[in-house]
Length: 531
Image (cartoon, rainbow, N blue to C red; front, side, top):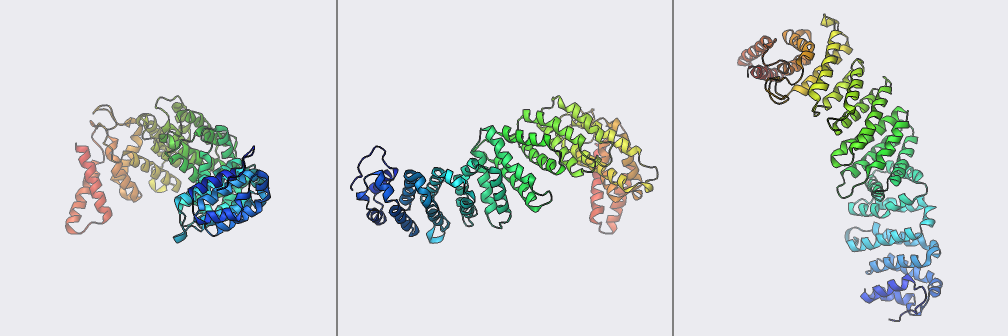
């Protein structure tokens, strides 16, 4: 083969051709060299002069799906490197020729792994080399990338596309506009674009793993356009869910560790400054994802200590009408409390604030659900159960003696209270057993603070017809756990009567499912207290 004359700066294209020609990839490559009169190309100036002939020949061989495809992809990136700005007029032709090969990869025409790798490497390189040209034409670029991200029959191709071009988002001069453009496109797509774009944004985060400042910019690029969308729009709801999915990908990925400090710092900053209830609810949902990721080492104790006082303050400031936002805050508070060590200085002040919510009938159900989630805390049987005992006493003190005059709101609050006790106590040993206490004679919690609920449970067992039927079922399950080992439980006669009557009835006719369940629960409660 005739070698081109050496020059001060040897064109990359010459090196590429020689490297592949030495491997002898066959007739396609030999024809290409003849078409471009390679033996006559001896300098960079001649390469520039013959660039149109070279590129047209490249396009023909790419269109014919050359058997030497990896070589021709390499030639494309090489000549783009040499031509620089002179390549702009041919950029879209070359990019389209390579991407069309990839998009046609199915069935008998399916590209091999090596061919795909070479094709994507070439597309990446020509985009990087010409990025100043491309950055002013990002919509044109993404009109070509989106079909790759949404490729229907091969998830591998979507994965490679996302990984290859994620740098474009990071280098974009207007990431906010680009993010909104892509979210709108994704929202209107019914195929696989959501999966491909989710991977694309995930890879963008990985591209700035330890650069906290860049991470904050990246978060801002997503958050700002999402919160500029109309509050009740389907696009906004979709975009929120989409970004949540990206966060989950980051959290669950075990191969890379993305620094969360930048992400959490940006979310915290926005959370602290925002006064819009809809925005605050979304931000608290995202923060909750990261708090719950503590077991994956994505949310450190220091982050929790900074966030907890802020969330508590926001919870106190929340309007009584924003029940969903209030409950979302409480979910975040309970997750933060569980992420902190039991000796944290924040716990006592937080419980003091939570106690104040116990006097608000509109917020009591959400508070009880929050407290139930704190069951894993070592101080649950003291601080939390004492708080619940005081809340229960206050609520029951407001219930009229004639239960028939109880309002629907009071009825629902009582139901929520019974549900709390059932969820906490069902399946646990009764007071005096070892599971929740330090010795056999120590109660699981201070029963003295729960005497009002105990009296209420006994009243329900004795007069079930005066109360909703589910109250009786809850009481049957709660009752064994409200007595000390040295006490004679009140209400045992009512439970014994239930068991005896059910057995007698069962000898004459088949019991209903509800009757069978009550017989079992009554028998279990009786046996439990006889141990």
